[in-house]
Length: 288
Ligand SMILES: NC(=O)c1ccc[n+]([C@@H]2O[C@H](COP(=O)([O-])OP(=O)(O)OC[C@H]3O[C@@H](n4cnc5c(N)ncnc54)[C@H](OP(=O)(O)O)[C@@H]3O)[C@@H](O)[C@H]2O)c1
Image 1: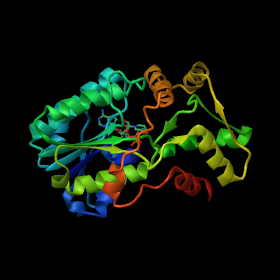
Image 2: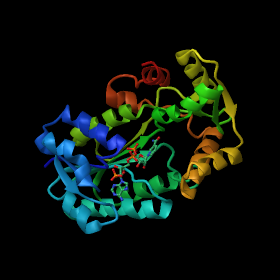
Image 3: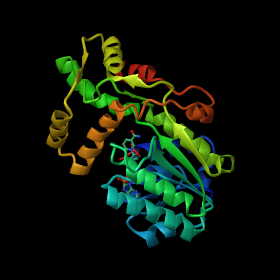
Image 4: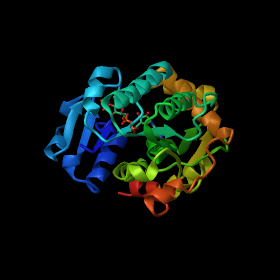
């Protein structure tokens, strides 16, 4: 077995497997998922569906056995849990004799970032680099797909709200990141011990995003710069866990500080073309 993708029942992992199937034989692909029954569609395509969970070293080691290269997709939990889970996944890769691990990190992964989840990725990157395994780090920027969440409210009220100030973010469609991950995974030898900053081709402000949504939908929509405390209360009212609220409010604080403005050409290099713009992504998603 050559390639294994974790989190294949998630959104990014599902897209990576889809694009990997366009590049290599299904019989060379395995996935490691927490609920194999959710991956029956992949079994039907000839993908080897294995049971793995980053909370279980022995299970994940068994899932990774006999595989040449693994894509570890970062999990979803509080910082201490996720740091432990990602270390377990790397330990499992080592114990299973995997040759090369690719990991989905985040842009600007600093332990002291206002975006508190960045500290998880900083730890995982460091742990992976120290593991002795061949590795590739994909520092993903933020999914343009996330921008759709505020659209129904904007269409109803005319307000597109976020605590982003004039901060700009290099949003990029999740699918573009999945294409890049699939191309790295299919040719790992070309990417040994490389770290890529996978950003959109341009950083966009929320004024610009609101204007795009307005022009695509033909509705009058303006950006409302929410106070972080108000935004925090809104997220809490949706039932988000405390660590998620802190991280998302922190993401916007980091954006206001300019942390997510730097543009890299790494994604264009991996894709062999410019990544889809936020404008084109929103047009595709909202005009149907
Ligand atoms: N760049 C961004 O804008 C952005 C935004 C949100 C999140 N993220 C990060 O990127 C990752 C992928 O994004 P996504 O949109 O695909 O998220 P997603 O749809 O929530 O998928 C997350 C995947 O992680 C798996 N997972 C969670 N805990 C695990 C564990 N203990 N062991 C093994 N797998 C585990 C989940 O498994 P199940 O399918 O069994 O639930 C799921 O498949 C997220 O998990 C998060 O770390 C990035």
